[in-house]
Length: 187
Image 1 (cartoon, rainbow, N blue to C red):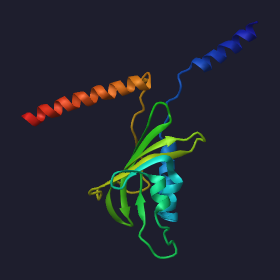
Image 2 (tube, helix red, strand yellow):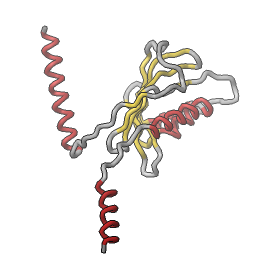
Image 3 (cartoon, one colour):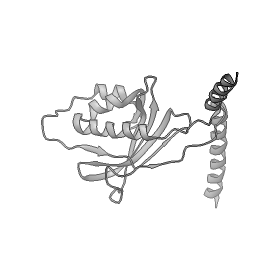
Image 4 (cartoon, helix red, strand yellow):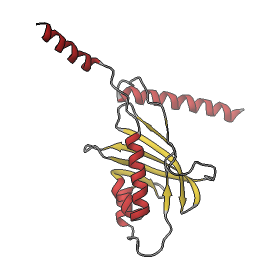
């Protein structure tokens, strides 16, 4: 009887123990693999490989990445070519462990051109694919070098409740921001 009680206590202890928060390590690994594939295989092939089916790029407006890159011409990888390179400096992950981001500088060969922002989603097979890949031209000359340590945004310890509650909170924040912006415009 005592043995059954000990086993039951152990099972309950494991089942009721606080769940470890996810970290963005897998997302950073996916970003680095994506960047390496881009260098090795070119833009078209790597973007097709790492974009989720619903992935979006701006070209100039929101465009399905899979459709855009499937329709683009193949790159001649046998000729000398400029390489798009990028590396993550910051990353974060949702408490749910299925959505996250990476951001950092990008360059054409050694010419730093700006910063990228990628939103990643864990797929049913466990792989990470990106939902949004975007960038902006800016002075990235002061950014850390490739291969350095990535800073992780803290993962929330509190749940948001439901998707509806999260959306309501976002709408309330946007409304508050709109009011503040309109006040600032008047002054």
